[in-house]
Length: 91
Image 1 (cartoon, rainbow, N blue to C red):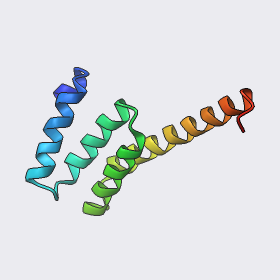
Image 2 (image 1 turned 60 degrees about the horizontal axis):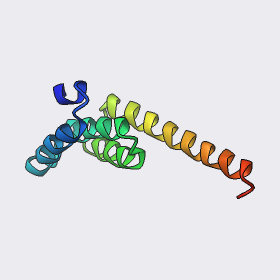
Image 3 (image 1 turned 180 degrees about the horizontal axis):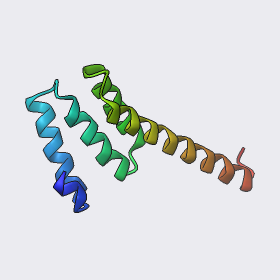
Image 4 (image 1 turned 90 degrees about the vertical axis):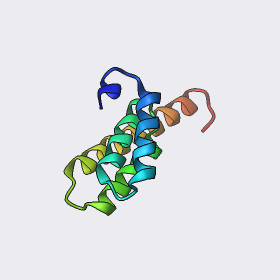
């Protein structure tokens, strides 16, 4: 998580990919990778990883929290796109 705190997202992502490759049942790795995806604005990937973390550990509250954040960001992106389309008469 130190790399994430330093905004070295690509390096952190590689590390968590490796953790998941080595230990695919480690829920915390999926949740931490989801946090990276959220910072990178890859919200759909974040939701998928949170879902996997929850599948592996249904009591893992942080995964539910991150999934909620990612879903909210997706809704905001969709709303912004809709507003943009209406302003440009695309919708």
